Length: 187
Image (cartoon, rainbow, N blue to C red; front, top):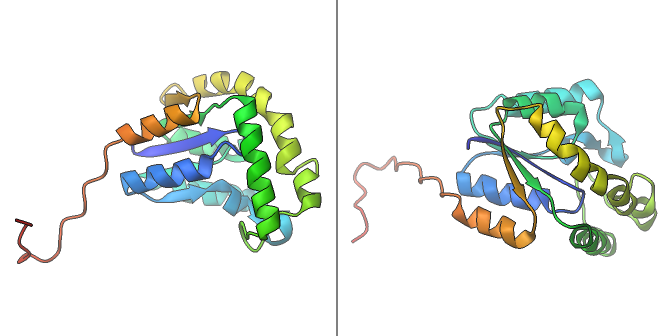
């Protein structure tokens, strides 16, 4: 497991999970949302977005999160493992709702100066409505999409508890050897 993509419905915790996994494996983390959402929530030009995904996934080891079909052919082709956070609708909806409220009320900056607003959060492309548009469709479509990439190891995690247990079993990367040849090991 050296090149991992983490997918799941909006609000499932992809980025948090992916950052934790990348830290455990001591590899770079890439977030497709940060590459796609330019200042003012303007979508990145398709060629530019795909180039960012291609450049990142050309590396020997990484963890990337995101569901963008616009670059699935690139990321999934380079990955060796696909981790799918496939949580029940009520779990994800509660996460979307609380996360969105926290971001709106706290005026939290997300990517490239963008912040969620009440209007944006409730817009057709906002996280609340996006959840309803995509959650059940992803549950239906993802198995066939993953089957189209038979080289991928599919890890389907159905609850946050199962995801936490899986992460806890991932071996931590060995620390890099010290450059100080005179350093003594701890007693």
